Image 1 (spheres, rainbow, N blue to C red):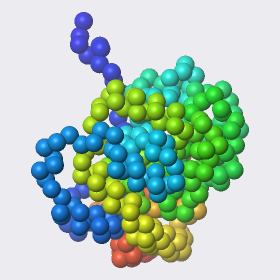
Image 2 (tube, rainbow, N blue to C red):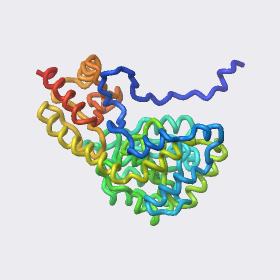
Image 3 (cartoon, rainbow, N blue to C red):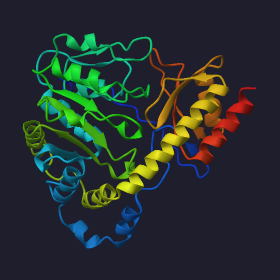
Image 4 (cartoon, one colour):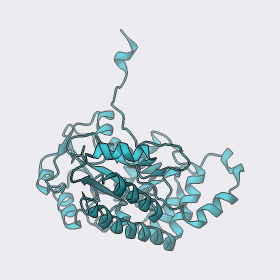
Length: 350
């Protein structure tokens, strides 16, 4: 018998390209174009490297405390992971264990089906409507759990809290996960519903709005029982998941609320300006409430534009997938970066 017969084979998630060029404009992975809060840099410079010889706090106590205080919940309602991907993966492993299929949109974060395959979880995708909206009725069928981003990725659309609550309320026997990676750019969080529904888990990240993708910090908030089950799974997997620098610098990021809002406000203002600029160039897109635009051109194929931009060292994301192959996902950068993008497109689309 070949040893390969016993290998767990999966088709892996494909992350956005990570080029390392000096003068490139990188608008393909939804990173924040601004630095983290000033206190993060100061603390990083002062950090005692001697502490790195020790294991970090396995309970991530300071960061859990800071998040609980910021979001006005109890500490036993907060779970912290190494990026929201870690939190979501652990949630799949912990909560999606029936023989019924979990449900998520057909156009959504492309890691969901990867985790489902990895953990041998049956799943069914529910098609977004012609306007890229979730159809509530699709989530009223029998299932083993539900997950969807809000705002959605890659479409950028936000579903109203009434629709989110309808889905959560209609599925009391399974866990419903709302992935809010982009909620800080104009969305309404489902966090107020956590006290009302014990089956709701809300997941967020520091990677986008808090400009800390490189430190990998994610968290979720939910019912105390959900969080206990997550911690039980985590401590059965790896006790020391989050490193010491991420924990202490994450606390500093949470403390500087003024800088956090200043940064997100700048990105939102640039996004709204870019909607007008791109529309004048013949692009159309859903009304994004994220830090990116999901755009298609009236006459030029998306892949052609993608390749032309790439040759000019301007990187955006193109997905060669059903329904979205003629769209580009364009991260909102600084005003200067976006002006360079627009100038290139004006010349190219002549």
